[in-house]
Length: 73
Image 1 (tube, helix red, strand yellow):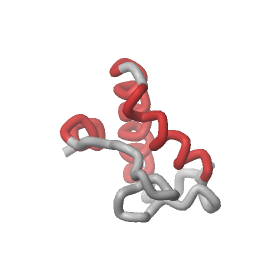
Image 2 (cartoon, rainbow, N blue to C red):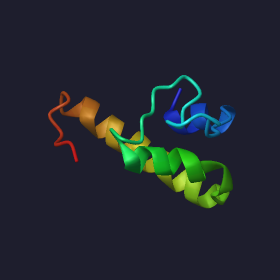
Image 3 (cartoon, rainbow, N blue to C red):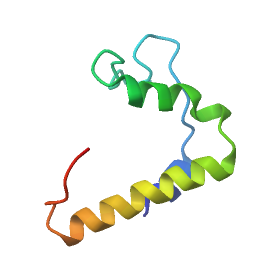
Image 4 (tube, one colour):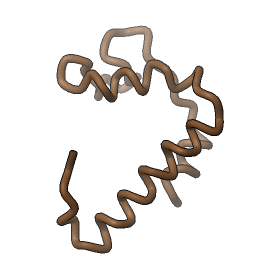
């Protein structure tokens, strides 16, 4: 299942606790950019969410195709 399908089915909402993810995986001190995405995700228009999910799917597909040698960042 593609990430875009998983995210469409999942409810992504920031946690009321500092760090963002309900599981505590996010720590805005370690990755403030990701924490910001999680924070604003519920308010984003569906078109923007779809674009982000499609970009992630494209990146992961390309990374798998080249054996994970794709540059990070």
